Length: 180
Image (cartoon, rainbow, N blue to C red; front, side, top):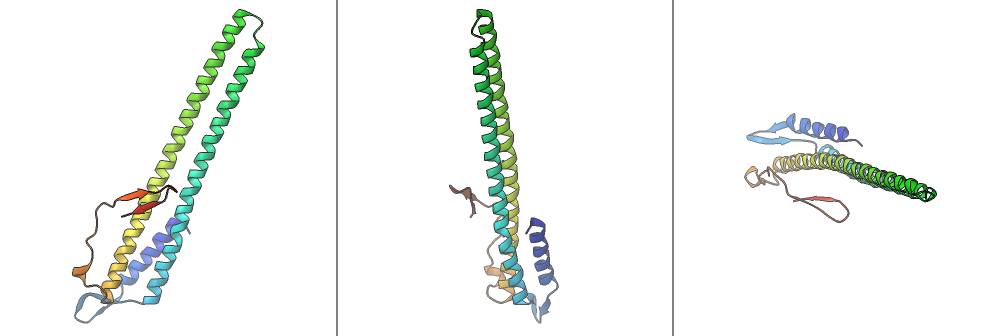
């Protein structure tokens, strides 16, 4: 399930609550189909692991990308060393070979560093967007859950937790993000 599907589900849940019949003498209370709302919430919950799987896939792709860049740099380094050994016959040739080898190694290392930086930036951007999407989805679900609880009399509006403007988070050793 894609992020757009989750957004559509959230829109459907929002519409269900917004269009629900009001309870007499209850300005902020309404009646919704509990099973239908729970089904939508369960579908949203089921979609969340796919977002995490996509983030893991991107991290694995980044690692593979970096590994290939290292292999390419190593191959260039070995190639440079072999060329330098073959030119040992004359002093001038040796000097030229060492200079060329150093340039190739430097160039390969610079390319490898740039590839790691670009891959890191890309994965960081994707992870940031995934985190924002997850945070937004979670806040929407929490708002909907509070509204359902309020509507069902489980929680009075005065008891509803205040919305946080900024959420703290931490990343564990498996690169999972935990919102607090």
